[in-house]
Length: 558
Image (tube, rainbow, N blue to C red; front, side, top):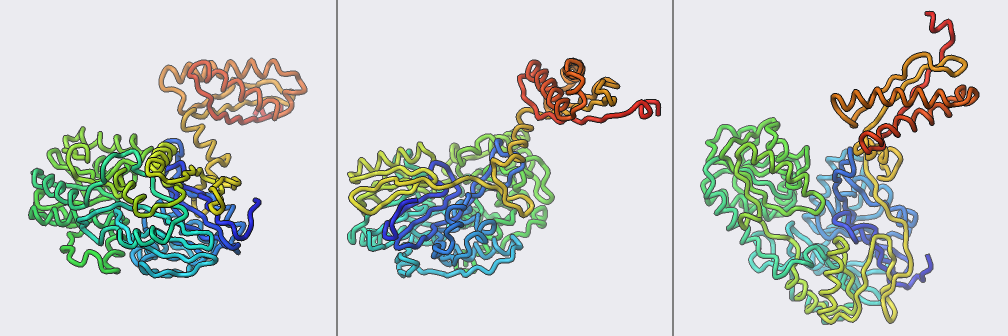
């Protein structure tokens, strides 16, 4: 890559052109800093995958130049990859009090051998890191202690917003520090690198107080047991739920390890001090059904999360009945619609009342809508807008909004681009390696590895196993044995097995004598035969496994 040590560069390795897996790099004076290191979550196209991680090869190859990792806040899509990938970096980590409290608990639960230098940073307290001076500025978001980063260099100042919103009546914490942001804008800002999540949503995001009031009303209207699912790290929402439950004379039980982790971290740094005593999960059945609110994980339809197991009547301690109420106090992350719908359908079939933000004001977004974004641009007045944190649609909408705010230049990144920010105009100067990984049994694996491709193919196309027994001259000794999974059931499966066996016999027969003595040649024609029949009968291209056994005359007589 061709750049000078004094170039101010921005390079996203994740989170630009997609939802989740946020990881961003900045370069100046021959040093790099990383902003956030998050995960994203799998969908139906990634069978057997629990978590998706960014490929850090580019910066791992330059780890001696990496001065540190700075976290904007504690959401999984911003810090969730640290237990898996920090060993590739070996750098110190900087963050706010709650963010680091949450991270410490994640690291402890991962049982890894970590000795990570963690540095707690206060708001409005600039610190040096490599060639950069960084100041954390207080924001409001759906988690405590989020921060924008004012990144100062000799080439100019960048405001990296992280996730944020404006909330004049927050339930927990404070509103975004508009006064400090305006002062930074007055100093002069070269580029704003900003959240695009709600760039297509008109108006304002709403206040957490609105969600608290909506939850209070929804609980008041419920006659039986109430279960509410929200993002585990949304401590303000947990506080809102507890206040709404108290207003209705109900106690609260917390179900899910991630929720308990977030509450513990919040209490450690001074939040949730007035939280009422919580009912242990195992004691829920001791209370009348109209005297309890259950807060649980599983907003995105995760099959192993509490809400999915409760909906399937498969949870070890929590049960719901017809007439009970489930409230989804969350948004749908794009790509999770089908998984969420499956869980909600199970609830509806059981005659459990379902309330989402489409039915009542039980959720507000933690991200800025268009009017808030316009207000932010008025405060910061950057020369360059760099939309991040969203799909291509979100980034394009953000870019159009920035243009309408008279930002002189807007540049759209994608994962792997390198943008030079210094000079007359910003420009993409290179592309670097990016990709997606997953973790399995302690190993980091490429999502495009042969094993993962085979899983996806088996999921969508099934698998066929063909066993053939040949004598030493290469002639078939018995009818080929065919087994299949995922192609068809009942009569269709029987028809396929019969047709595939005939096709295998024909394929072997037409081979020359020399080729029939070669296992590789036999395997190829048998594989082609069973797949050809599957394609003809079902329109599928299954994985084909071929087993070849060769026997002599004495083996057959035995």
